[in-house]
Length: 370
Picture (tube, rainbow, N blue to C red):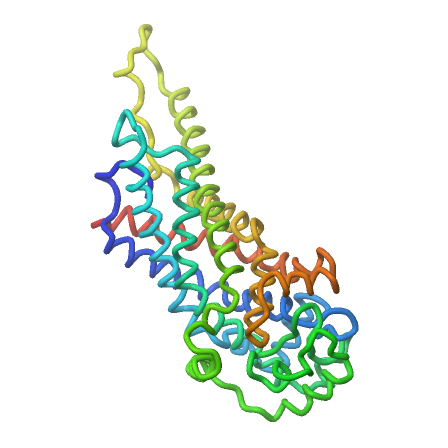
């Protein structure tokens, strides 16, 4: 991924292996992402639907079964394949641009960590334009089932029904609660519970239904509701993701190279020809690749999590409210804690997910490069 130009994969291989890596990662992480979105978009205070991740998981399993955590999988599964393939292609292509415009003494020398981080930033920024529509459909489908749970069952064990508060509740943009005054900034918990009960007879819609509804109501621009949050998350997250991954790999390679040199008997007069050849990432075991990927995933999600929280709120409420307006609403009602709903479960699941993505990509690159 960051070797000399001769060692890099072709764009076709980047697309294929990035797609497969994204598919593997999404199948594992999606149930955790569903919990994250439901926690991020629920009302606060006495109207809260869930006491925490475990309560959210228990209620989701009780009312919809295990498959309810995969609600809306089709759109993000395709999106994850597109996102990861585009990320790896863009990352490698931007490296080439940086290399051509940088004053490098050795054209085949690897880029510096700041240069790789910059490439990660721009690759994430580009991918955000692809990902925002996918995220909008995904978030609406993930919270849709909550609207059809019996209101009494939702409120049992702490918390009332759904409603607005902190910039919107667990609401599809075109549901009865998300339109009109019921979903406003000053919605009362009692009104929300009543509206939730009335809406429970509605039928769920699939990805195509959300797409058609968004097009009819808001046009193409409706798919980019929440793009500011996605852009911040992907650009900053891309820099953190690739930057952390490369930093950890560099450290692991240096340690392994030092251990290898120290363990090798040296002749009395050491020359450069007698030193062991430098190691490459292909020499690292899979477990170390997964370690670097896990740390990269955790850094990615921790870097700009508040932006993701605001984005989820925007995309599950009526279009029209901007990023700053929704952020102010969350701050006014919940303080800084409101921006970290679902943070723990997101960072926890990001470690194995990112480990799988990088391991899949690296192993395919090693054994089936073209």
